[in-house]
Length: 361
Image (cartoon, rainbow, N blue to C red; front, top):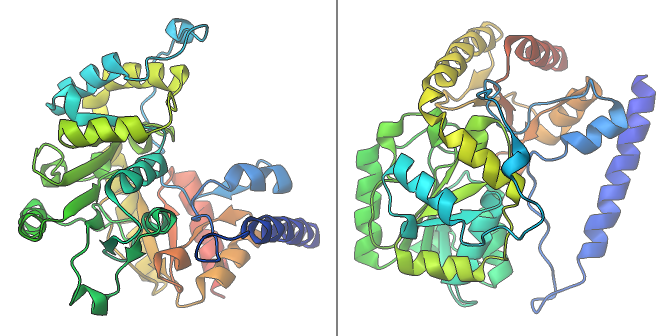
């Protein structure tokens, strides 16, 4: 069975290599950037290895709220409202924002890319606080802009400073007072601050800066991680920038089913404390077992944990796949000896830890 799985995996890697090589047909700079790696490979791997293959590379709330859904109102015979007026009004009530300050997108990657194409010119530059989601750098590269190194930051002022708070992949969170200090610095320099707060709903909400209407601050929020359904994301900023982003965004990328689901979901937003408490309890259980075997890790405020197995992440990830589990190889985050695992229900967490321990011996 193990040989068969490895054979399938080699076929999978070969196929992906062909796709990547064929996509590099060139740009003005002579090279087309590679697609950012995310946690969306599980479905393809389950097709190859079977449905018992476990994916813990994507951080989706395992205790997502269950509520009755009736999609009869999701009328597919007409175009969705591309302005998403009703959904924006609901979001505005939940987050105490004006609907004109809210922009929607089909996933964080869409909002990041549309933001970059709206704000940046080819000669612009950005600062990305590492470790960070590789989509920030990719979106900047696709605009022809540059990501500044630490040395370059000494002499150049970036157009945008990207930060993920709570951070992905570490799960750490910068407190509100630190974020306010950073915002004041950006304002003084005349730069934008892009705050990816996609995981904030699983963390300390008092540290959020989403409620601030500050010039040059763009905040991305997500309920998909919280509700356990990848899809819609929304951002907050001044109405002028939101109008530009809505213009640059492809029309109707949020389909009628997702829009209707989100309208239902916001009615249950206040019930989030239950899942955050259950995730926190699983954290403590996880930490205790990791300590027992001497594995170092980062204390997380959200439903994933960054683990340092002191091995090359790519090789360790491959060994975990041999055991039927996909973890997140954090090489793309700039952490080549670290992996990230999502916190799941106890039965799955046991299976993941048993596989990790087996790979270490």
